[in-house]
Length: 342
Image (tube, rainbow, N blue to C red; front, side):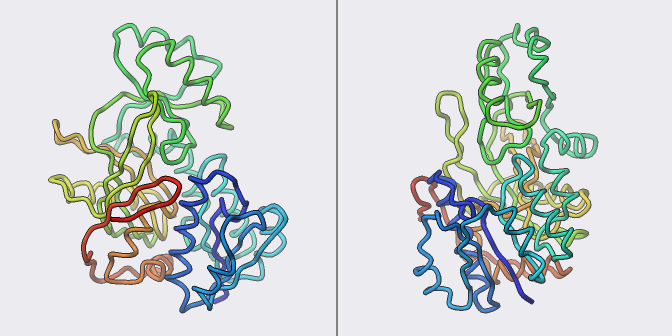
């Protein structure tokens, strides 16, 4: 199998250190997991990754240093590969468009189908898919042209979350306590999303967690419940890292709900992350979103499992799940200028 692997930020040579460092750790984790198989990987000539250093560590993986834009390169070259494992965000339909290029060129996607990616890329569409069958937090779709229609809901002094419908991590998520806050937050979102709407969501307190899952497209297997370290900066939510695995009284129920949700969305394959909120006071579990891609928890989880997680992702896409899951210990990681583990 001729395999291509790439991580979007480093394939583009983006200059955002927080994004590229996170992406670099995921890419290097995959190259380590797949080194015995061998793979090509894309790096922009503007990337901060040292190709010599990476190539020296993963001798069976070959760098492709590109100067052109990623999408034209894929259109021209992807058909020479049997399979591709892309790591890319859902925002602006980036992951969907990449997956469509693979499918249109008959290249096996080591991940979810374009249909499943599209369903999970818009959080309001995901909400509508899940709301009648799974616990979710009440969310409203707000058009940027209809902001005044929401003015009355702030009369009771209740807080809400605003979030982009196509965001990733905590990007653009803000707490708003008043209509003035709401207008300010929506102005920021309008500059950062390509969609004509965003989400207004009830504010519910609880622990931010995720479940890492392997899926064949029919059967899903939870690997771990993970804690997400979410901070606040001027009312904005900030993702600072996490802990893998995370022990909680609702762990088993959380994993089961996440598993069933993934199995309910046709075409979700490979590695899938499900973000959940655990409300300790009410002993409630809420699904926040489904991420049809590798998430940051992978960089810690791959160090703890009793099997090679990169290979297991490929196996899951091919219909096979691990027979036994064992986690040797736990790891906490902090996200900043680099990702550090303890």
